[in-house]
Length: 400
Ligand SMILES: [Zn+2]
Image 1 (cartoon, rainbow, N blue to C red):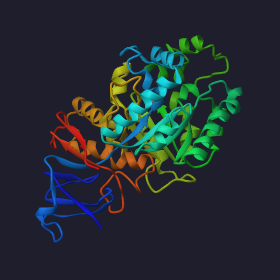
Image 2: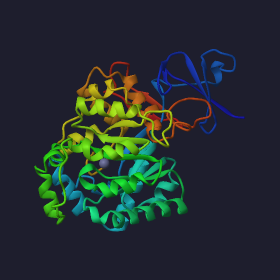
Image 3: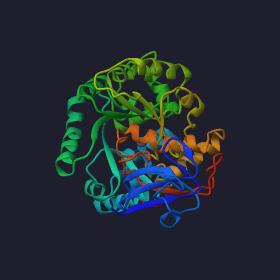
Image 4: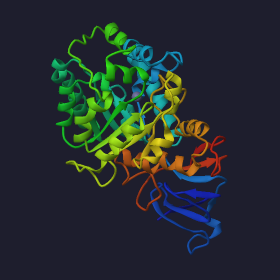
């Protein structure tokens, strides 16, 4: 069997930084082992030496590749409601343009070191492109519908899309709610009844969301008016987002919470307590994951989440790019740089763990990806220009 042996200045294995180690893989990048440099079988002449850090491929836990054609079409800093309005009303485009930009986005993600994507879908656009790419996709078929009476009707097309994906290409997928302000209680119940699967939801992203869910006030009212959606049936709950999602939180075995810009200490404690409760279909890992998409937050004009609070919660953190409608590029390293620029105490290794092993766990892909454990084929990256304290000058190059 042909082997590859790789050594660099350091090796980050998905959770720990090592020195003087050699990564041994098959010719196609499946991990055989991580061994001491100089150990038998790692003679210098057949080891590839690199300058930088070796690192498993990144996981982009939250993206919408089907919005890639909207790159640059919505100006930065509009705020949440104008942004949502422009996505809803301005996303239609010729199929050829959509497909073309999706193909470019998928190729760029791979080049940027991304190995797996949690991809939110409202359509079947780009199914074939994604199936043909070397990236792993977990498809999150996203449903919205705030009018209670429409729950069944709103859910059906997404179930059909999921079936279409399964029949044509296969691969992991779930049907998931869009956001608290866009899913009715009956729709959340229907989603919970679909059975155990990894779910995700946009969560506590904007001040507008918080005001609407807690008090039925603020700019979100204007969005419903613009979209012609009546609101007479909606009674806000005292606990706002937490109250609205409580039944869904309680019944979902694994939920990736995306954005968390307005997540408070009180809400963290609420989820910590729920995380202790067993639920049907739960795996051994955490039930709730924080997914951070800092560049999208800044682009839209939302605050960055309280990352120290989330990091101290004990619930794991993963990282996403969100879509090109609210980001300049689909690059996980760029997201880590933004996080560390804001929170300088976050170490490079902590951030890399969020971007690799924890991301793989969030998407249920930890058996294949996220670390240099034997048998996995996680992708192999060479990160240059970084150190334990800062990754601001970091660059990524793919070795496998
Ligand atoms: Zn999103």
